[in-house]
Length: 166
Ligand SMILES: C[S@@+](CC[C@H](N)C(=O)[O-])C[C@H]1O[C@@H](n2cnc3c(N)ncnc32)[C@H](O)[C@@H]1O
Image (tube, rainbow, N blue to C red):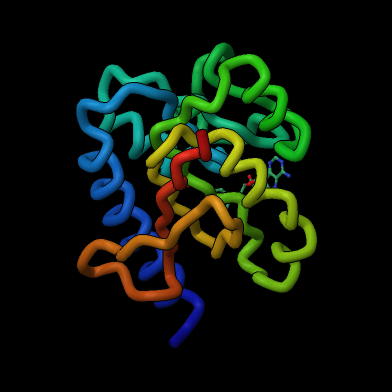
């Protein structure tokens, strides 16, 4: 498969899984978090399908298309290794939906540079929160769940955060 085909399939899978995730959290309170604002494409889609919902977006720098730029109070800039724990301290473990899209597209590189990410995601997520991710997240508190129809295994990943003991 050419890289163009692969890119198109990745975008289709992203749209499908975000639509599915948004429907799954309907009526449920809690933050929606976009980890990896980038160009702002998936952030823009999330805000379209979750109207009225507060969506915080994270990235090292604000480089999104101006049409997809979150307001200052919804944008958290800096290295997520540091900004995610600070967000938990401020808001608690309250995310209902987390979209993780911090990948560089090179899994071997991600495994090293983003080794801390699964633990930070688990620390943000409320019990039974839904986490959808472009890369696999291995953490004892994150349980893999079946993907929606049309999203091939391995192209995207979905997890529920297990209830904290006690
Ligand atoms: C694949 S892009 C995101 C694409 C975006 N969701 C979109 O649809 O346009 C990944 C983003 O994650 C960000 N990122 C990766 N590691 C990060 C880190 N440790 N802290 C903050 N941002 C990070 C990169 O700066 C990059 O913008």
